[in-house]
Image (cartoon, rainbow, N blue to C red; front, top):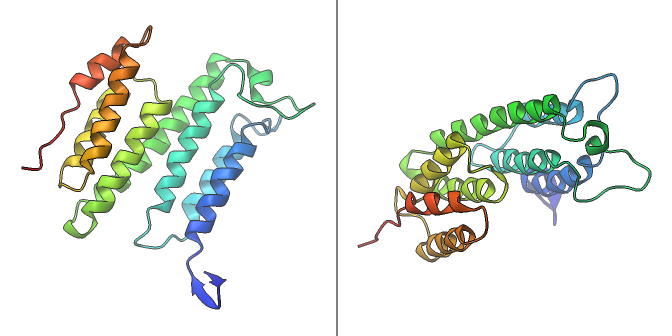
Length: 206
């Protein structure tokens, strides 16, 4: 809990904002030479797992989703930014297959945690949260996932359908998202977006 204007409030939202910024810093911090690959990321995930979250909060899963953003950035052969005179993991590993395998393995673990949480939101009183979170995760995959991977592609379709399942999805948002996918499909080497668009139905409200 944290005091805001004299009132005690849960600190989850502040922690979410802090950690999202912290992940940006963590990208450029190299792994400890004696502690193994992704030591800092794993340590942080353990802390997040052990933290006591509010029962009606999805911030833990939103943080997990942002961890996937970080892991995606770590797969790049050259990171999108650096700190002067600091050799980040792209310099240390340079797209090494074992390093990428560890990232993928950790990504699968985090993804499973998110999916498990989504399953707990199937009750009537939490279905709106489920819809919003499913679309949030879908957009993460759209931006950072390899949709050529059949498993990831199918997960994105499942999330799209889950977002609309109980009628809480905003129709305009879904239409704009689908239009974006169709535009991406017209770019070179993006034919997999064409296939994806065909698998994403827009559910009618009538």
